[in-house]
Image (cartoon, rainbow, N blue to C red; front, side, top):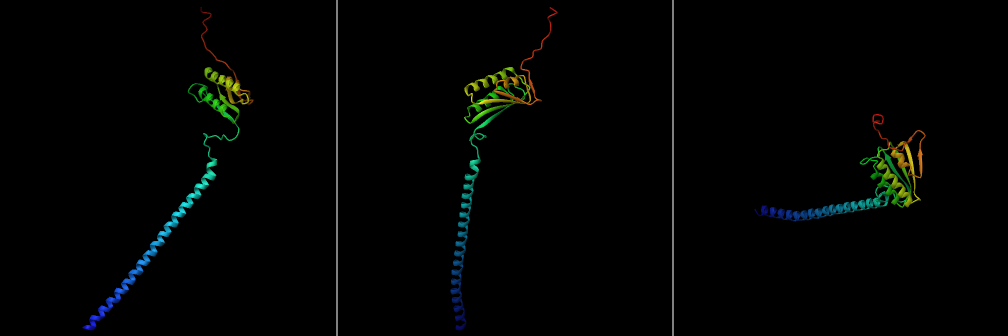
Length: 195
């Protein structure tokens, strides 16, 4: 019995020693693997950081200079302002005196404006609205005579539209454009003979 008793004791002692060494090996392997995972995470984070840094640099160096923070048109060099007078000239329309006068004032206030082109395609409309625009063009030309105003009539420039064009320094029209007829028509009944 003593032989049988010693064998299991020596086996269990060997297993205990082997078990401790194996546990140490597993812990060492676990530490190595955790260190490797942490190193990979660190490398990935630094990679993301440098990619974002490169992207930010390229954005600032390439994209930002192309952006215009002054409202849509580049103000870096001299330019000619283009103002459209399209459609019927009337209050609450695209070609109202308020819209055209505001555009004219902005153009004349801009120090980089060298000239103003009125691109006209209108049958006319309200004599009062046309008169406001005419008066404002004359006033602005008097304050800044170095800024020339040119009226370019495309298809149609009649009545109030031609009145506005007459305030410009020069009027340009195609030979086929319909131009002219400043005036107001009035219709009435002919009761002269009946009285």
